[in-house]
Length: 103
Image 1 (cartoon, rainbow, N blue to C red):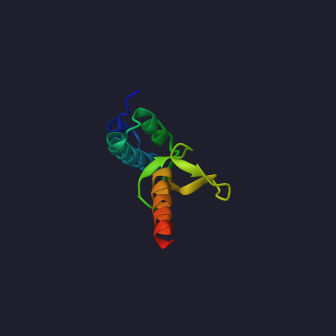
Image 2 (image 1 turned 90 degrees about the horizontal axis):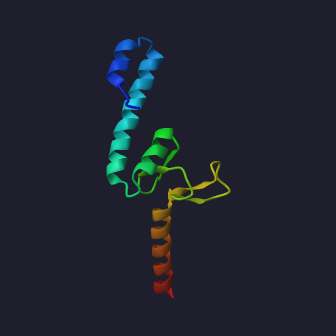
């Protein structure tokens, strides 16, 4: 089902609908960038379209809000760690090397 935002803008006059269209434009731009970057492909893009996304504060990358990209954390509201799995793995590896050097 193709999205025709230009046609929707011409037909819609309410401000709320126009704001939703502008948000949709931004989401589409993000999705285009994510699909190009993604090694997962369309499945990641589909999750992003649904709005189930979370941004890693460490690497600043937006990932789907799933256990495949974020580790579990029972203390957080959404049940997922704030850092993505890649950043957690890098941090753990650096911490392990630092401890080895110290001893």
